[in-house]
Amino acid sequence: MQQILDAILAGATGDDLAAVPLPESYRAALVRREDADMFEGVASEDKDPRKSLRVEEVAVPELAPDEAYIAVMASAINFNTVWTSIFEPLSTFGFLDRLGKEGRWGARHALPYHVVGSDAAAVVLRVGSAVRSWKPGDKVTIHCNYVDDQDPSAHDDSMLAANQRIWGFETNFGGLADLAVVKANQLMPKPAHLSWEEAAVNALCNSTSYRMVVSANGAGMKQGDKVLVWGATGGLGAYAVQYVLNGGGIPVGVVSSPEKAELLHQMGVEAVIDRKAAGYRFWKDAHTQDESEWRRLGKDIRALVGDDVDIVFEHPGRQTMGASVFVAKRAGTIVTCAATSGYMIEYDNRHLWMKLKTIKGSHFANYREAWDANQLVCDGKIVPPLSAVFDLEHAGEAAYQVHHNLHEGKIGVLCLAPSEGMGIDDPEARARIGEDRITLFRRAEA
Ligand code: NAP
Image 1 (cartoon, rainbow, N blue to C red):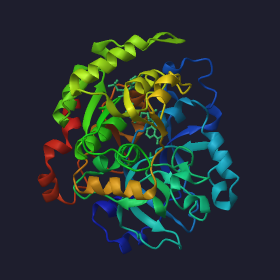
Image 2 (image 1 turned 180 degrees about the horizontal axis):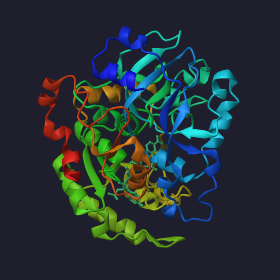
Image 3 (image 1 turned 90 degrees about the vertical axis):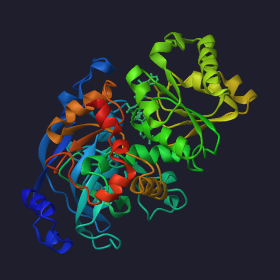
Image 4 (image 1 turned 30 degrees about the horizontal axis):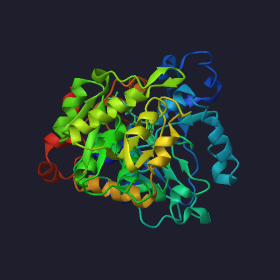
């Protein structure tokens, strides 16, 4: 990989890069099948990704005709890497084994190890014989929607494809590595004004939030809509509030510290709730919710923005869903993509049907949505909420930080990139978009 890195850093042309031999193995962050039971009997919060996420050399797999090898300059931690590394709610080797049954190319994925990671900023090294739009040397970001486009169910909204998967979570050969294998229809242009690590953190959370807030497949927010965003400085939330502001909506951001509240104000969010300071107790005990606490949240929202919210951007799940359904306006939408605090959800259905509200499920984004969300990053309309950077050897520590909510925004991981700040090809655009905007989260963390 050193020869490849040297060529990239020396600005090699695509042809030069294509002439550099591929290695037989590469460095990757992975979990091992034999470790899948290592946390049995351990409480969820004590399951430690630093114990299960290892960095090892693995063999370069064969390339399918519709795929590309990419040299990964930087990647990012997503919550799905936390799930894989603590083997919750189930071991991801089940996903790999299922994919392994899908013919010759699927069989490559069912291995004793799972190379994780669902984001990357990279350089294309080789493309398969069926790839038309990309070539060696292209600088790219990767979205994680992995679909077989020869399946008719993928042709409308590819997130509805019967065999839709998330790359690096439900497939092998993910982005937390020096090299990765992706389908050509996961490739998108790298924003030229961003460094490798700034470019690497966006695709998964940015595209997910775009679909949830902007797309007609999600809440389809319109100008003037009031939107409650849980975890508003977290991975998803930090993009969601940018979409609400860009689209003429009014965000109500919920966070859990004065520092995060200040960060939101600096992003231009006026209505901010510190849920810790407010001390909401939506659950009286493990089985009983407290409607008076839902009502208190509703009052706090009205005090800030004068009305109930049209949209709730939901992902904490069990802890908040009852409140989310309650505080949404008549005919409002609760759009949800996750359940970090528990997926067995309880809410009072009377508030849903009597007030004609909708709960809308959402999951990642199709290629078109991911592409449009990436274009907004390229145009500087969306900026990366990168707050911290680790090297690949410390991927376990980075995942630990996300698991314990010790981070803000996104954590980047340097793979081949030797240091932060490299890969900026358009400094003029960067200056125009604003160094301060681009580095807001990084400076707050420092
Ligand atoms: P993140 O960076 O950890 O941010 C989540 C935020 O939620 C935290 O910053 C925290 O903010 C808030 N939060 C956590 N627990 C909470 C609770 N009990 N009550 C209220 N707020 C709580 O994670 P993320 O990347 O945004 O992902 C969030 C969830 O979405 C994860 O479960 C992830 O797996 C899922 N996800 C799903 C998709 C999809 O396509 N389906 C895509 C991306 C992520 P405060 O402490 O500041 O309030």
